[in-house]
Structures are given as C-alpha cells and as structure tokens.
Length: 133
Image (cartoon, rainbow, N blue to C red; front, top):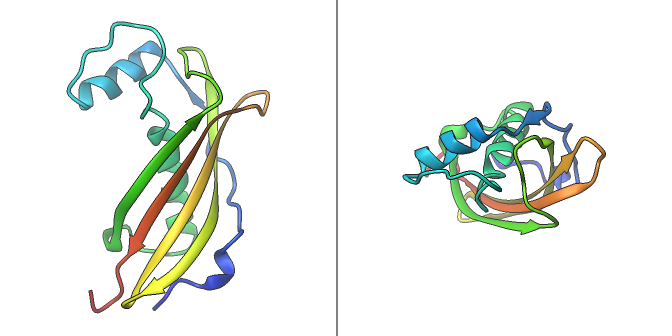
C-alpha cells in the first residue's frame, strides 16, 4: 500500500535528548573503521540522531523498515558537534512521490541543542519498496 500523501509537511516529535561524549564519538568512529583522537565529531555523526528520528517516523506510520532502502543522505552544518553537546533531532517529511510501485520519501531533520539552536540539518531520500518489489 502506498504511503499517504498527507504526510508531506508533517513534522514528528523530537527524539529524546542525546548527550554527545568523547566515548560515543569514539564508538562511532571505531564502527566506521577509524580512530578518534579527540575534538569535534566527524561530519557524518548526526546520522546517529537522524536515524533515531527516522525510526520513530517509520514506527509511527507503521512503515516496515525492511522495505526501506536508504537512497541519499546530506548534512549542512551551522557549527561543529562537540563532546558535551546535548542534542535532539526533529524529522519532517519534505517530499513524497510514487514511482513504479515504490514510494520515494524525502525527509529533513533538524539537529538542535538544548537552547533550541540548529546545529545541523540533514536530508535523506528513502525508497519504500512496494509490496511487489
């Protein structure tokens, strides 16, 4: 069944606050095959929060994760993410179109600090495979 077009423009509740620590950054870097020497988080670190926001969206809309193919991810920074930051992500469905029985879902997520200031914006393209895919 196709994803409902009325989702376009809908914003979902923010994720729980996530405390960034050197340990968490180090775990992320190790999982991607690197070594963390301290300092700011790598440019792709916000995926940790954006993925939580995406999973909450999929669960709220009863969209099966096993039908999702991640098509694209972009990051636009206002400032670096540092140990000690406490962040959350708020996802909005930006676009939705159907092609060949699949839904192409464009999302944006704002990563904000405890003061509500935007630290990073992410955008993702998700392909929701149709039942016959």
